[in-house]
Image (tube, helix red, strand yellow):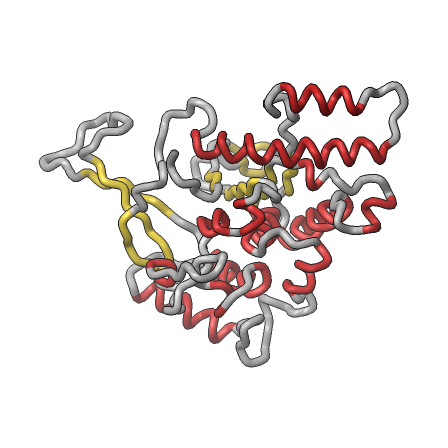
Length: 310
């Protein structure tokens, strides 16, 4: 499910001590689960018929910009955000209207947003913190409270804020719902909890493995195949395989589903969902310690679905 890139020197002799951005003598390779290497385009999510947890090396797609100077949004993301803000402007107007605020010229405000070619539409984001299942379900509950598709949210006059978001992000456990909503075409919280089947204990499931749950034997068999292929394995592998049966729909816990396939979702293409971003932190021996707690580096890995180069 997670995509990793490595950059290798292909210029002969030894590489220079300082790498220059854009140096053509470097080649970027993409490490993906083997199941991702061959994909089908008949469904909204690219899936693979060869269900395997073993990663393999494939060439990076040439239409994706993997490395670039940090000079604002990429052209592809900026274009997507501009189209998303046209949807947001309408949703924000509907939300503000239900608040029935006095001394606020709503029609004039929305008119100004439109006259600015939607560049003045506020960029709103929703972030779910880390914290395992507690964070995942708490964040999902907050999303439910902000969703105009649900009557309870509209009754409380909070519905519509979810539709006004441009970005949605999640860290660690908070990335589980962020990812799950994205790869499932952004359903309501009620719909997605039905897909998750939270009554199943994912870590200690004892029954026979099915399309919605895996026992520890199946999980260890998947992980062992990865280790035999020469890749390091650890506790995160067990947790990832177990949790995928809950948060990613598809054969064998959505093993062949890629995060990059989010861009193929109808609601993403129509700009009817926020742009998803997931983040993972890594603790190392070099991290600083405060009051007995280690603090991860600030430049932790942040991942968004790769958009085609424009």
